[in-house]
Image 1 (cartoon, rainbow, N blue to C red):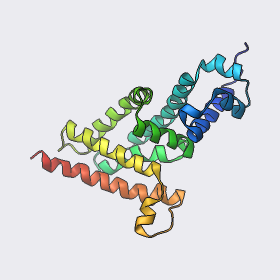
Image 2 (tube, rainbow, N blue to C red):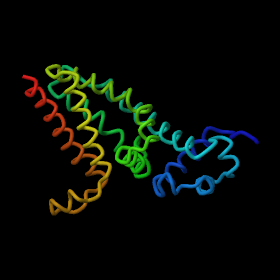
Image 3 (cartoon, rainbow, N blue to C red):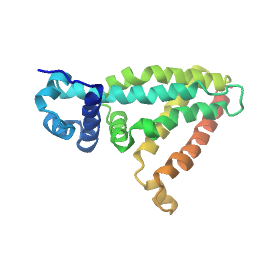
Image 4 (cartoon, rainbow, N blue to C red):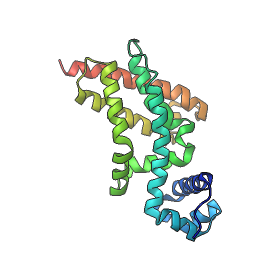
Length: 212
């Protein structure tokens, strides 16, 4: 069986798989469908990715690598002496998944399902792909808000993740309850994310009062 000749061919398969898993879910997405969407033979798909579980894991790892690389880049630019350092840290956490690095609607659906459904498979992948960067953000939260301990910083991170999931879900409920038209993608990435950054930062600072 000939190997894939270019990295772009592998990327094409992973992108196609990401889209298919998003649209159909893990259980309903078949290797035949993924191969057809990617324009490769099913035997070639099995040769390089073995089975659906391995392919799914590689899809998650690929996107996590892209998201986490941008998160680390943004974290490296945080001005920790600034009064807004905590907001910068939270923004570095929120922006990559909802921006181009996040893969658009396709990966957002996978990410949402992984965090909400939490199968053993997804839990293992979340641990593998996101626990290290989570620890880095918890350290950064403590650096930006030294008045809180690590437990409070970890809680703050967890609350930030919950808010991120809310952005990703974007089912229109906020607009319906507030009586406004649906947010555009640009508005969601600016107005909504800015509000959530302010909300999370304020909540994390308030956690310090619980420690007194």
